[in-house]
Image 1 (cartoon, helix red, strand yellow):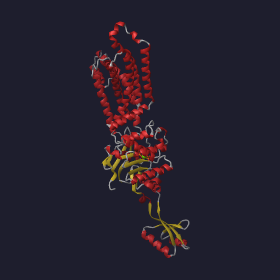
Image 2: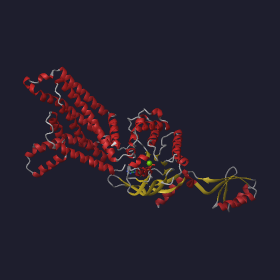
Image 3: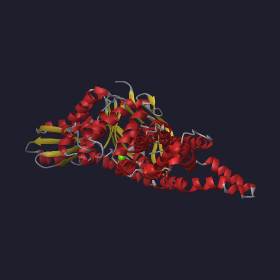
Amino acid sequence: MKNIITVTWYSLREALARKVFIFFFVISILTIIFVGLILYLTGIEKIFAPGMQSDVFTAVNSLEMMFVSPITLICLLLSIFSSASFIPIMLEKGNIDLLLSKPISREQLLLGKFFGGILVVFLNIAFLILGVWLIFSLKFSIWNFEFLLTIFTITFIFSILYSIIVLFGIITKSSTLGMMIAYLLFLIVSPALYTAKYTLSVLIQSSFIKGLIDFAYYFLPKTSELMGKTNYDLASGHGITNYQPILTSLLFLVLTLGISVAIFRKKDF
Amino acid sequence: MDFNSIETTGLTKVYSSSFGKRKVQALTGLDLTVSAGTIFGFLGPNGAGKTTLIKLLLGITFPTSGSARILGEDISGYKIKSRIGYLPENHKYPPYLTGGEVLDFFGKLSGMEGDLLKKKIDELLELVNLSQWKKTKVKNYSKGMMQRLGLAQALLNDPELIFLDEPTDGVDPIGRKEIRDILTELKSRSKTIFLNSHLLSEVELITDRVGILNRGKLIREGTVKELTQKNEEYKLNLEGSNVDSFIKQYQDIFQISKLNNGYCNLKVSDANELNNILDKLRGEGIMVKEIVQQKNSLEEIFISLISESEKGGLK
Ligand SMILES: Nc1ncnc2c1ncn2[C@@H]1O[C@H](COP(=O)(O)OP(=O)(O)OP(=O)(O)O)[C@@H](O)[C@H]1O
Ligand SMILES: [Mg+2]
């Protein structure tokens, strides 16, 4: 455990040394300032119709999501980009030799790196979301604590994508393939499968194709659903309305990580 | 000490490329023992398999066949590494860390912490002459400084067995002397040191035993003395008016030949023959002022052994 914490902590150091994460942090600060300016200088509350007063909670919530969603999306894309080289750098000749010569098991080393990457993104996302939430809460005196749960959904989405990056990083010792697959899954495959499963499949006759879509849908992680519906439900206080996307995605994460560890344990350096 | 720090039996490593087409036989049936408290020099041309052996022993690479034990334990476990230090060739450190932080990171990975680790870091930086560079990022270190830091890193956990892969690579002559002194001091504290090096004159100075590896096979192993001694060859310093005629007279019977400044070279088959000649010299009234058994440098032996083994390999 101590070993994992050491590696995690030093992975955090590694991330802080990267410019991308600084950039990420700057974006968060700018967003928070921007939100603050809009809320306090423009009198945005006037856009709410007087009759809507009773439902200010929902309105504020939607506004919060409106600001936070695109920024978290950008942050996720940046995080994938910047964390993609963690594993390949660790596997470089002269670096991995030294790490493996220490009394640390290969599982501990890999898990430490994995948690390190997640911790960085978690801290960044938490900073951003907390900041925006605080400004809204102060302005409208509505303290919707459940909005903060989105910190965990976003971090969870990143963990899934990062596990893919780790797996391909170990196999190819380079960042390109893993990064491409993560982007592909996040931006194209996951939204496409969601649409195929819930909109298109009503129109499809062939049970074979239907089965195929089902298989792909249930097997692959549902990042776009988590980013959309799950996130929104949580933020607006409805809690988790459907556990399936979370559980099946978690299963995928565990599987990917398990395969990564299995390959890493046998690899020659 | 009476136990072995390193023991390998039939240790073999075949690297196969990612598509399995090209195979490299890096180590073939290596049987080697290194006893505790000694400095062992492992020599061999580039690509001989020296680094491969260290990597196998440390679990960085896995053997194709054969087995090995370090400090009495099988190499498959990782906990034993808390008693081992390693300076890899071409080692890299996170460039954004300072020298002190690098040592802190690897110290923690070796299971050290708190004030003990802090004290150890300062002590080691002092030992390798890097104290004033403690707070400098390693990306600004010179090659020799990196090497010194690497040595400090290898000694963090006060290891019993230390693997050094070309520790003096890129280090200036004074630094090399300092490193030799550190190694001798470690030996005096009964640490075992396994040293890969190409600097044979240095190896000759500090090692107890050496092994010579070529193309993955151990072709010779022994003490430096055993390897470098030319058993039956002597250099004599003679004085007397009849030295020249003596040599002329006996050069067909004994293998004696004249060198410069009153020296001559003598090859004999055994000690009897040597004494026989000495009797004859004395009988002729020739003064024997000096008699020195001839030695090869380790380098000469190395080159001749390797070329011999290459010829054998070509057959
Ligand atoms: N990871 C690897 N994959 C494939 N082949 C390898 C690998 N590492 C080493 N080899 C090959 O194994 C052989 C032995 O290499 P090794 O690094 O052990 O040599 P060495 O004796 O340390 O040489 P040098 O003196 O140059 O450091 C070489 O032919 C090398 O190409
Ligand atoms: Mg080598």
